[in-house]
Image (tube, rainbow, N blue to C red; front, side):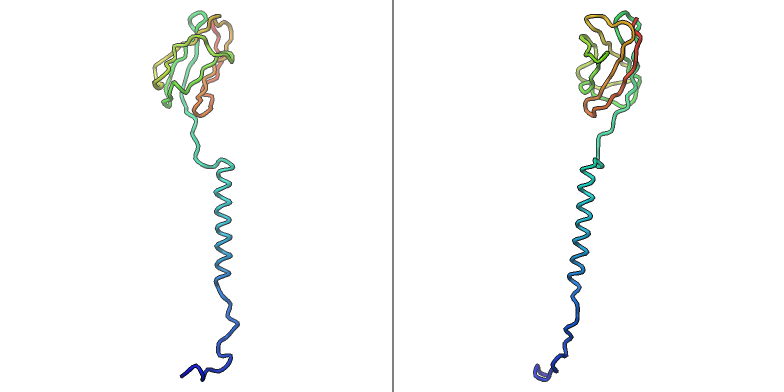
Length: 140
């Protein structure tokens, strides 16, 4: 059989290609995946730091001095902790500059003008920007 013996119109011209359909499906799938990834970043659904759970107890049994005990919980770097009393930074503290919290340890907060009456003690973890302790203490 040679090319001359082929009848005219023996090849159907009505066959549709599958390529455009697959191309459209792939384009839609890529668009959906990109929208999901961008949405996760915009709305913060990605991985985040969890807030530490450290148990602190603040009390006063010495005139003008607030004592803070570490009762347990997660280990946190002292360098990331920020302590305030009544919104102000204590002028004198025995909190370590380095190291980590350990159950049973304690530190004191003092001020040049001694604390008295009801004081609000706040401890914030600057690494995660979370309040770990906020309590009122009656200072003797």
